[in-house]
Image (cartoon, rainbow, N blue to C red; front, side):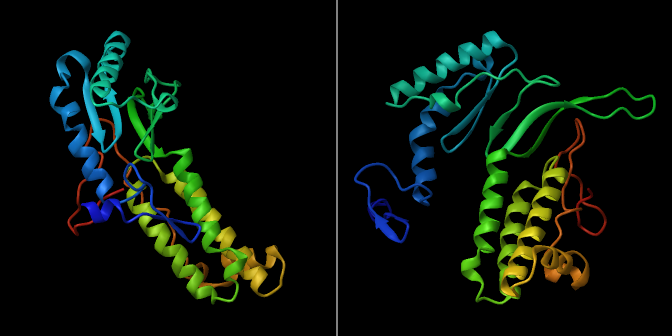
Length: 252
């Protein structure tokens, strides 16, 4: 444990060893958070203050009314104060989930109460939808841009595509369970644009040339994986992870 706390964090090629706290992203950090915040889980009264969902130091409380939500927030502040902690003001708020209302971010997903599209004589059904948050989308774009940066022009295009594919597979595997088809199309288009731009720079051609190669001339977009069709979209009041079909795969 002591070795993990002293391991430090590498930033801009330099190892920094803080004298307090745990390293951001360190493998020991979630474990210590669970040990320290176990008191919060143990003393939380669901009947009085709603359902508390916690992952490490991220917490969401689901309440039946605003009165209960306000009481839950005060209770949360009180329990954290006993541990020498306090909620981060910028990320702490009460959200009323309703159609056309605001949503909230939790564990990389944006959650929002929406209404299904009417079909025939069926009335729309309201349900909780989720898709990658704006921050998660920006992280994906930043990582793809980093992998296709001009500083890597000496590397073969095949290697660049493989690196982008590796990131997309991991990112999509996490976010595919939800209502993510639209944003997956956006990230897929961005990846093709960046690969096309990289190809154009490498061969000193125009962006139009690079985009045309990726979109039309090259077989299977130079091997870049497609994200469309990978989303497991939930249905209202059904198992949101879908059910396996006869072949063991999950239906969309």
